[in-house]
Image (cartoon, rainbow, N blue to C red; front, side):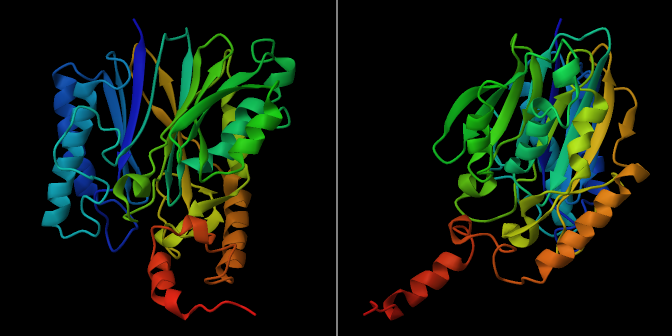
Length: 364
């Protein structure tokens, strides 16, 4: 019997702006998932938050894209939205593009990462949750985890990793996908992944087809047709025994690389690894945050978890992120802090260009 992990997230309301999900909203989600657990739909679950996003980590035996599991998540977010409106929280229900479930939560606003697998004798799984960024934020770290031998020594010295991995990449603009194999097609892969706003990693597999990682790739502004919030992706990675070690899976986040999504979804900033407790994007609604939770899956149960970035070894990464944030902030509305114009389609910039259109004159 296989185990499925479903990580479904949404921003349905926050305290004092786009900052922190209210505990009452998480309690509302807990009520719904608790009932699903009692009824046998779920095997286990854990609810956390990263900034203003609620992240529901669920295990079950129903496979990916299961309608009942997705409807349970949708109902949990709807119940939390009702509570958010009662408390007059900011952005109540903002990630829910409909108040009626349509059979699959994908395309309705919330982000979804799922994987189904046969459990190993020991099965460590790591879940990442982000705030104030987009799915492409995982391109660099997941490339380093599964394709860069300078990060993952196992690609060189572990016979179980030496053959490399296959990357399923989505073109979120053209709604196409491609699978590239590493190390054979490393340069082709990098040619795509560097365009983080368009090409994003969806899944990673071993060469034998076994799932290794899964990422939520929903682009909220593309679905809504206007800017209502950033995507704030989640990801699931398997570790150890035929996969990169837990240390190799977390190592890329020691480098706070630049990602888009800071402040109104319109600025670049460093991705800061923090503990659950410190995932509070306050400064200029940021900088962007990522938390990492390590689980030991056993008979479809999550068990205890490790707060992976609650570690002084990541203090320098947080310090470096703060220095980068200082530097980027001094650019104000100028690129590269502000996103390039083609990434500003869902902000006020198109309206400004329309207003000025008649005042542009041909140059001599």
